[in-house]
Image (cartoon, rainbow over all chains, first blue to last red; front, top):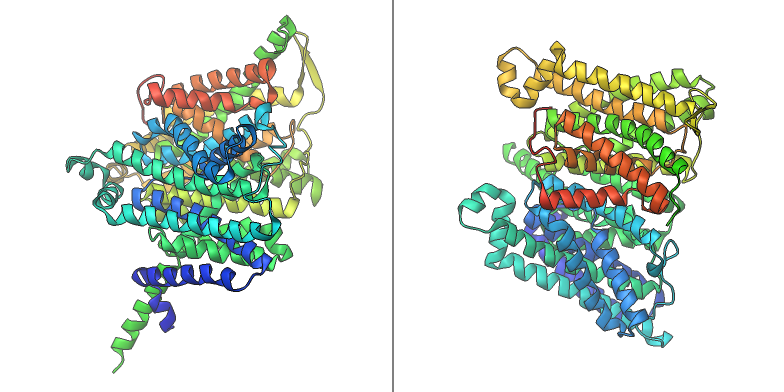
Length: 324
Length: 293
C-alpha cells in the first residue's frame, strides 16, 4: 500500500520522467520491431492525451471532440505530402497549423459562451467533419486517402525512425505544456479555470488566453494526428471517430486530470494493454470497458486513480493514528 | 445538382413537415432538461437509441409483444431511468455542470458501446406501429410517418399545457427560476427536477419509437439526434419554447432541402453550419431572449 501512497500528484512527475527515460532506452537496446511499434503507438496517444489534459486540466475547457484536431491535421499533412511533395517530417509539423486556422474560425465564438457550449460544439464538430469528409471527393470520400509516403522508404530504419519521431513529439508536447503551465501564463490559465469572473476582474483577458490555450492544444493534438497518418499510410473519416475522441478523455481521467504526466501514464496503460494483449473481448468491447471503468472512478472519486490512492492512504493514516 | 421539379418541391414540403415536427418534439425535451436543471444532457441521443433497441428486444428478438405494448413498456422504463438518472447522477453533480456533462458523455459512450457489443453494428429494423402508406398530393407517405406527426403534435400540445397551464408546470417553472425560493414556497425541487428529467428522457425515447420503424436502428443513431437538438436550441435560444419550435421548422426544412437538392451525404452538416453562424452573429438565439423553461 505504501506504493499507492507515493502515487500522489507530486510523485507522479518523477514516475513519469523515469517512464520516459525507460521508454527511450528500451528500443535503442533491443531492436524488436513489434516493441518499437507498440511504443510508437503509445507515444502518439500520449501526445493526444497531453493536449487534452492541457485544455481541460488547466483551462477548464472540456473537449469531447479532440479527434477533430487530429483529423484536420492528419488530412492536411496527408494532402501536403501527396499533392505538394512536402517531405513527411515537415508535413507533420505543418499539418497542425491548418487545424489551428479551422479551429479558430469555428471555435472562437464559443469561447465567449459558457463552458458547456464549447464541449458540445467540439463534439458536434467531429460528427459533421466526418460527414463533410465523406461527401468530399478531393478528400477521398468514404475510403479516404491512400499511398501516403512513410517517414523512410528503407524498411530497416523505418521502425526506429518512427519510434524516435514519436519520442521527439512526446518530449516536445511535454516541454511545451509544462513550460506554459509553470510560467505566469500557467497561473493565469488556472485562475481562469477556477473562476472566470474573478479572473476577468483581476484584469486577465479571459477570451484571449483561452484562445492561446486552444491554439497550443490544437497544435499538439494535431501533431499526433499528422504523425499517425504517416505511420499507417492511410487516412479515412474514422480518424474523427468516437474512439479517438474519447481516448484522450479516458486516458486523462484514469490517472488524474490536470497533471500532464498522468495522461501519459494513462495512455501507456490503455494502449499498452490493448495493443500487446489483443484479447477478443478487449477488441470488441474495449470502449464499453474503458468508459465503465472511468465512469465508476469519476463517479466516486472525481480526481482519477490519484484521488483514489490519496483517499485510501489518508483513511489509512487516520486509522493508524487512532490506534494506541 | 439535382433537377428541381414540382414533385420534388412537394416531397420537400411534406417530408420537411414530418421531419420538423419530430425535431420539435426532440428539441423540446432537450430544452426541458436544460431549462430546469441548467445542464446539457449529452446522453439525450442515447435514450432515443435505447428505445429502438428496447422495442427490438421486446417485439422481435426475445418476446413477440405487439409494438404498441413494447413502446409503452419502453416509455415507462425510460421515465423511471430518467428519475434514476436525476437522483443517481445529476443531483450528485449539481454544483458542477461540466462534471455532469462529462458523466453523461461517459454514460452515452457506455450505452452505445454496450449495445454495439451486444447487437453489433448491423442496422436492424423494427416493426411499424401502422403498416402501409397513403398518397398525399402525389407523394407516398408511410402511415407510420403520419402517426409520428399526429402523436408529436399531440405530445407538443400536452407538453405546452403541462408547462404553461398546469400546477406541475408552474412548479417546474418556479424550480427553473430559483430552486431555493421554490423550496420556500412549498415546492420540492428534487422531485420536480426528477419529474422533468424523467419526462425529457421519455420524450427522447418516444421520438425514437416513432421514427425508427421507418428507418433502421444502429448504435450510432443517437448522436445525430443530439446534433439536431443542440442546433435547434442554439438557434432558438436555450429554454425558449416558441423559439425552439420555430427553429425546429427552420432546421427541419433546411435539412430535408439539402438532402433532396444537394446531397444526402451532407445532411446534418447544414444545421451545424447554421449553429456556427448563429454563434458568431447572434449568440443569444434568433429571438434574442432566453425565457424560463
